[in-house]
Picture: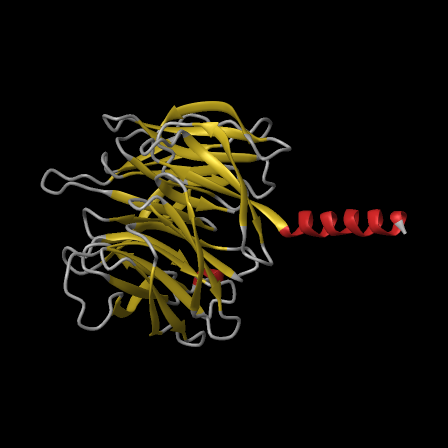
Length: 354
C-alpha cells in the first residue's frame, strides 16, 4: 500500500512538473525590483508559483529568448537613458548567467527581437531614434557589436523607434515619432529601405504583430488609440485595409496604447490600453484580415505596458507597471474572449516572456 502511494505521489509530481513552464518578467528598478525574475507557470491551471530572482539587471524593459531556450537577451538603460543590450545563458534552474553587454547604439532602448535562425538581433532605441542590428555569436550566444545602425532622425523631425521585427529577409520598424512603419530588405548583408507606410498624423505606431506568412501586419498606435491593418500585395509591399479604435464607445480620458498580439490560431487579436486600463479583443476574419471588436476588459491594475499569451493559447497575462501586479486571464477556446482569474503582486513588471 505504501509503495503504491509513493508511486502515485511521484507520478503526480512528474505531471505537475511537465505542466510548469518558466515565465520571465522584465522589470524597471523601482518599487524594490532588482532585475529579471522568473515564475513557474502551470500551463493547465494558470497558476504562478515559486517567484525567484533570475539575475540582477538594470531596467530590463524588454526580453527575447532563443528558440533553443539556451540564451536570453534584454534591453537595459541607465538613469540618464544610455542604452545597452545584454546576453545571458539560461541555467538548468531557469536562473540567468550574464554573458556580455554591448551598446544599443542609441538612448532609451525599448524593444529587442531575434531573427528566426537566432543569428541576429535588432534593438529599437526610443530616445535615440535609431535601430541597431547585431550578429549573435553561434558558439557561445554572446552579442557582437552592431554591424548596422539605422538612424530615422531628420533635421526637422525627431524619431522614436519603438519596435522592430524580422520576417524572412525583411526588417520592419515602427517609428512612433515619425508616424510610419518602415520596411527594409536585406541586400548583401545590410538592410535597405523598401518603403515607409504612413499612419495618421500623430498616430504614434508603437508595436505590431505579423500574421503567419507575412500577409497581414497589425500596428497598434499609441497616441490616437487605434490599430491599423495592412495587407501584403503582389510585389511584397503593403496597403492599409482598416483602422479601428481600441477604446470602448464613449470613453473620455487619457489613453496610450502599448502592446499587441495575435492568438495562436490567428482568429483573434489583442491590444492593451494604458489609461482606459483594458485589454481589447477583436475577432479576426482569416480570409480578408478585417477586425471586429468583441470585448474590452479591465486589467485589474494600472498601466498595462506589456502582455503575453501562453504557448498553448489558454491564458493571457498582463504586466501592470504602475500597480505592481500581473493579471491572469483564461482565454475562451472558441470565443477568444477573456475571463479574469486572479492577480499576482510583483514590482514594476514591464515585459513578460515564456
